[in-house]
Length: 405
Length: 156
Image 1: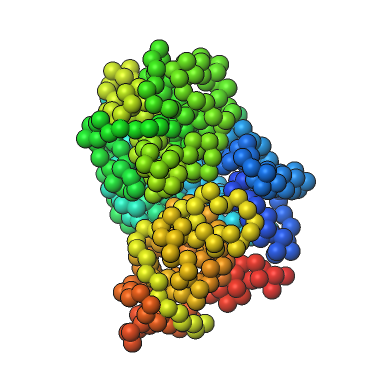
Image 2: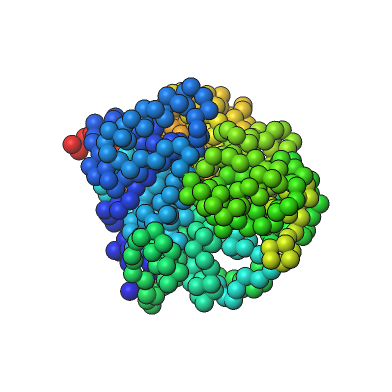
């Protein structure tokens, strides 16, 4: 009996528990510090096959210094026999979601968006580099079992609305710290209608409301998705439990939304921002760089030309290959977009799509903090459909049902 | 664990991008992070951090998990961070790096003397004492050791 977090972590909300970590991962940004901490601890990697080192943040390397740091971490990971993924294979959260993480597992990642993987009914949460060094050295860590906020979904999405719009809606309802220290569970009849890629989007943004993780119960959608990667998993049954709080969202009433800089919880209808000038559109990231996202983008821009510079970055090589196989990649290229190598792209403002002072980017990512994508630049956040029609018009535009049909 | 310092007041929802920008992350040089700490929030802040106690608003350290943010503060000489609430990854990182984090609601006057005692569980300014939300015994042990690395080494 209990919330998913209580059942997986084995305790009641508020308890401190020590727990074996089933999967742990770092990326090129945090892994260097993890390695430094491990060496300073004088410790060794205990179970390398459970630990992933995934290069996604600045890929391929942009400077000699980055290249040197990546080289050191790459050599270490390979020598230790850890699961290593080199530049161009994709974003850590996406790769861990391509058949690696299974329902009921405990997952720790040295990246705040590790909560994405709660979409599989796993307890997945972000930590810092030194915590990950402790996990490399012991295979376990401590957790405080979180209280849980339930988000009950009703009905089905209609028109041009996407799971991303639902994500922006719940983050605006909870606020930037409304779920701090808590887990979020997405429940209700509407949850079953959300496909796997949309569940990943919803869980991805849990941390934007401060949450430790966002979770869906593993159901027929989950198990069918995992079977596609050759993995078999059991569904999770709901049990009576105590939620700290419950909020309700009617999926049928969700409209295309946009988060206004510099706060992710300042959300307006896309229609209310129509005509806002933009300099760049960025489509991709661990929020919206999956196959279904980029295929939807291709569908909208097919046979047309974007009016502003538009950067499209697939979340993984698997996504890129499928886009190519199904003809979407050519469509996106011919519409005038720039295709970046699979990875985080310009989301964190470190390379490849940084915006200038006074410039405005409309992005499908999850963060619009001041200066994040470039000093003096502003970031609006939206769904893929809103990004696509806005790229075609050169200004923020609300997508219509006909655009996505 | 008693200490004191001069208050530096900052706002609410200060994200880790504002503490240390993404463009400075790719290095092992901890002093570089201290050099650029708060650069995108207020470049003048850095000079006031040595020996300071940061008194922040709610949701301190939200956003990216980058541990460089707490390292930058510690390297710049910050003695502790006080806020009514912290983003949980920042909170864990601070403990792991050995930077005291105190959850309490304290009205901030720039430069006021702030005293605190992690073990006794209080923070005091202008003669008024506030209770802090207690840390777990393990968190206190890690802080006493100076962070997770020395804590680990001492137990091997």
